[in-house]
Image 1 (spheres, rainbow, N blue to C red):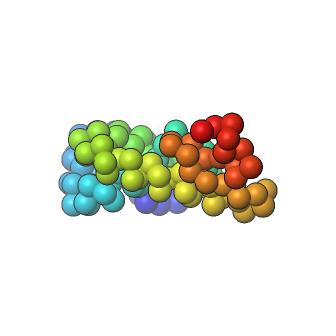
Image 2: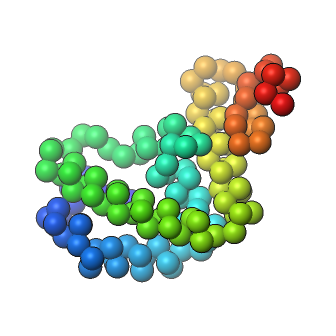
Image 3: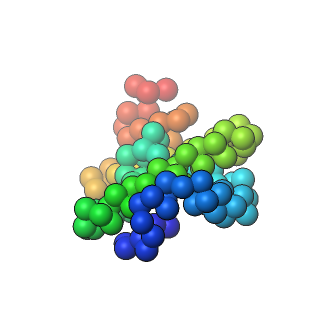
Length: 129
């Protein structure tokens, strides 16, 4: 989503023109895709590993450009997310939680399930429910 070496200067990515370009790009997406991308890639509210895709191996200048691009996309996706129905938002949250549970399962080998808007280890269901 964000290139390793953004081509334009940082001021361009702060400009209104760039925000309009991103808005037009995101408006082409379906509501479901926009919400799913927001919860799985742009916010750590339900999945602490959501921002792992954002590469940190950039120079200082390239990182500042990428950060501005990220902030712009995040703001637009956030606004788009809250314009979507609650049902679609809940499905996207469950998708983000499933990715989180899968990542946790790979790291510690324990099984996790989704209870409400949280993940829980299978042995701890009685405590959380």
